[in-house]
Image 1: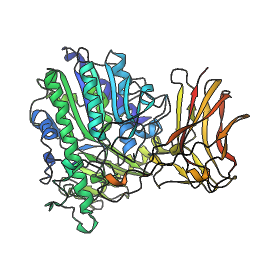
Image 2: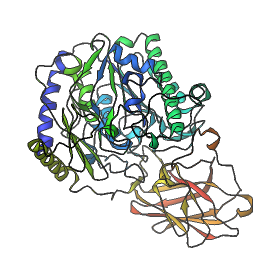
Image 3: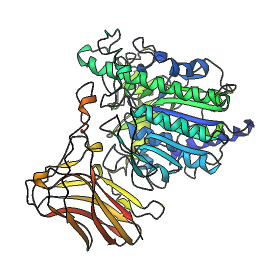
Image 4: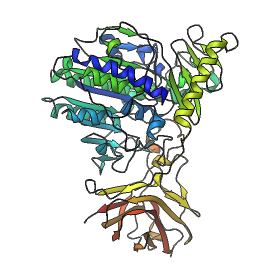
Length: 586
């Protein structure tokens, strides 16, 4: 564990300086955008977009010139939550269970909650659905949003409020902000930690007219170097969605002003990966999914009036792994878990107390590809070396000219792979069911496996449902572990046209079974297309699924396959399935 040991010594040294901060603990507001590139903001030099509220955080606080995350959503979120590289926490994918953060990992919310903070998360979680992977099991006392990755509808969408299904109100970014600002107001008399995790400008590209109208026919002035790769319609929608985020960030800042909390609140803004399309991004190589500069560089803006000097520009490189130790030091939270952190507190850089700041390495990883960044260089996932001071677009490999640097960074990547990826495998974890403190367990289609002719409604599993269920040999399974013996109420979220109603279905686990008929018919239309600004890139359209109550079944502790199959099919199909809910009732 050589790498971790070295890092934790640095973190320990940084946290020891927390005693210098003797004021009352600050409130924390963390705003995370989804698939917004570094170049999507005015403060980064984009002249096509207007982001005055986000930009104001840099004007009134600090801007990090080189801040890095991971190439995709859930790994970055896991690193923010834990201060540790995502493979350490078991996060290997973005769906079908690979997005889950191991249960023995402690989060930033665990740390702040333990010191008396009110903790709330609002938006896209993307680190596990079933309790205790759910936000309510990871330190957040209040949760409103969705726990998946992609979501299929941004207007009046199905959401989760502390584990219970609810219907959102209006456009999702506005709705999440409504709940976040209500949380801030409710907890204004005590320190609070508010994590506002927007799911835009992630596709599907949906945004209210009041933001899109400015862009729908706009002639953009900035483009990626390779114009042939850009989908201008997608770019227009992404920038409109960014302006929607900015308007909502303005609402959060206004609420802090209204409650006279601005001076007592740290506001932090960043994004989870590079842009989700080829658009202007400062000439950097790569986009979302890439371990190159353009895939992993994110804005990081931090405002704390009276502590962080307005207009501060932080030059040393930093990453998502640094956010937990940074916020912990700034808030004088001294206990952040038992495991060594990979991150380093950035508090000295923010508070202008730097005496010595040695160079470091930050690693990016996705799908087995690894790159490493120092203050000056990046060694890409093919072993090519770039001097980013002289060549920020990664156009010239200088490995043959700087052999010692290339060898040093190649060795560091090999060590990182050996330490973090040697035993990194896709998954052996079942989906837990039956915790007494969280009796209802949702098992969405995303986490199930189709068999026979059953298919997903779209290539991206996250918001999909199962369809094409036509034969008695077809079935759907979930790998679950029942943690508490007891009786469970069984519901299947379904749709079925009138002509096909009446099939008999059976849900079984071990020797326990419960069955029922698919009735009454329920055949709502697909929705979502009416709000799309550009064609979809994998997300399913959605329907208003209805709960089919099969009855109750007695389940005993243990692991196995939960199987849903049909024993009689009088029509052409059984039903479409959004998921199964098991609720422990005794």
